[in-house]
Image (cartoon, rainbow, N blue to C red; front, top):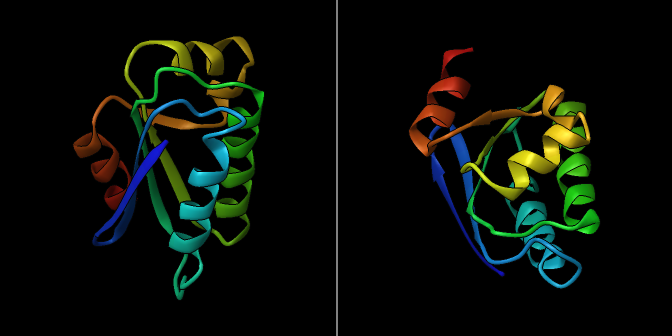
Length: 115
């Protein structure tokens, strides 16, 4: 897994490339920890997973834990998803009701900036 992180005020954007599984999840977790550490205001986090072809239970657990963590500090998070495995996984686990998802980075930023 390769993760790129940058700030597009007011959002923090993380783009992951590779499988979000038992071997890739620790890399993404480390980047999320680093991105959320200096939070002086509630974070507006965008996770771009359009280049993540596979997600296992460890990866799904990381997404849920990150959502809970962001909500605890009154932040907001949007997942950017392509049609495919992760979107389907969220649907069949009924987690799609809990996550805000968008199809592009621009849509995700607009969603976070609007509220």
